[in-house]
Image (cartoon, rainbow, N blue to C red; front, side, top):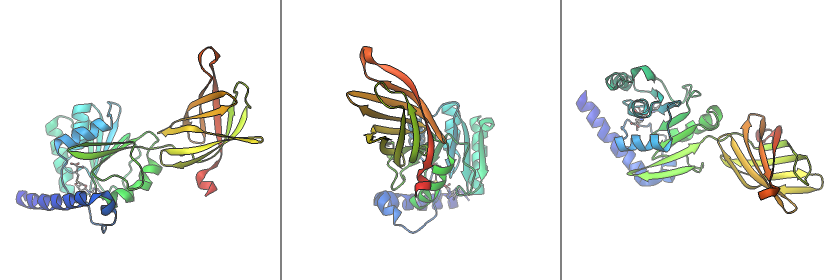
Length: 285
Ligand SMILES: C[S@@+](CC[C@H](N)C(=O)[O-])C[C@H]1O[C@@H](n2cnc3c(N)ncnc32)[C@H](O)[C@@H]1O
């Protein structure tokens, strides 16, 4: 058994090493080979959890949790709760025993299952060390089901077309993605700007966390400068005449609201703004 595990671990190491050497782009063209078991090093576990900035209130979900080391470290070293999902039942048993030995069995759970069908919605941090075909198949579900602001950390294999919010290389490479709120579409924006109109139609295009667009008003268009989206936090700048208006706010489903600061120094005026969705990006096609 131990010899069998050692042999299969060596084979897994070769397979993962070959895919890493080929790079994520090349791996995307590989056939849909299953992700084998290869444990992250302890340095890799530390760096993944550090990149995610794990806090005590987090639920860290490791997709393909192997012997449980990521989930156990999240509980033991960062005070979080953890959930591991693993397709190999022997590894699930091993993880539970490891959690008991580490004294964190109360705060972690290991489920036998397939990450493609498991319920991941409670996770506030998701970690994964999976081959690209599985990472790509997971992406639509992660984007649709995880709450905006959830941090995803991928070890070695990131998403092919989703630009990482941060990328760190320390022995291995880790990619951080913050799940963005869905803001693409048309919004009715209400804001009282000094010298500006009160009602605008805000139109936004979105590619993951990258957004662009502007505000349409009777007879004009104001581009949204420095438009940024991080989780459910949105910001952009509109300019009317000689004044810039800095919008910052929070997206909550079909509404967003926050504070707009116009001007600077003694001329600075802050007021509330609010927008409600008229048409979503999906509806617009
Ligand atoms: C490279 S190992 C990583 C283990 C652990 N996450 C770590 O970082 O040490 C990948 C793990 O994913 C598991 N796995 C592969 N496909 C899976 C699937 N569809 N659902 C659940 N687990 C899967 C494998 O059995 C293996 O334990």
